[in-house]
Image (tube, rainbow, N blue to C red; front, side):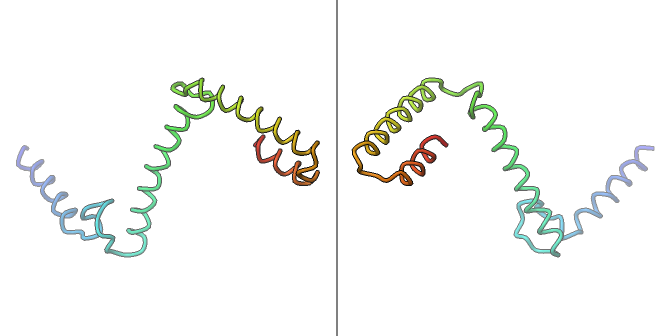
Length: 108
C-alpha cells in the first residue's frame, strides 16, 4: 500500500518536474508560451492588487490606523487655501474662471 502511494506521488512529481512551463512559477524567467507568461503576470498583478486594497482599507479615509491629526491639518490647509483664493478673486489678481478651476482643484 505504501509503495503504491509513493509510486503515485513520484509519478505526479515527475510529471511536474519535467514541464518547463511551470519551472520557477510565477517568478521565473518568463520562457514558455504566451498563456504561461500572461498567467504569471496576472498572478503577480493580483497579489499586488490585494496588497494595495488591504493598505487602502487600513490607512485610507476612515481607516483603522489612519492618523486623524493629518485629516485635521489637511482640512485647515484647505480652508486657508480657499480663503486666499477668495482674497485673490476680490482683489482682481485672478479671473472668475481661474477661481472656479482652482477652487475645484482645492476641494477635490
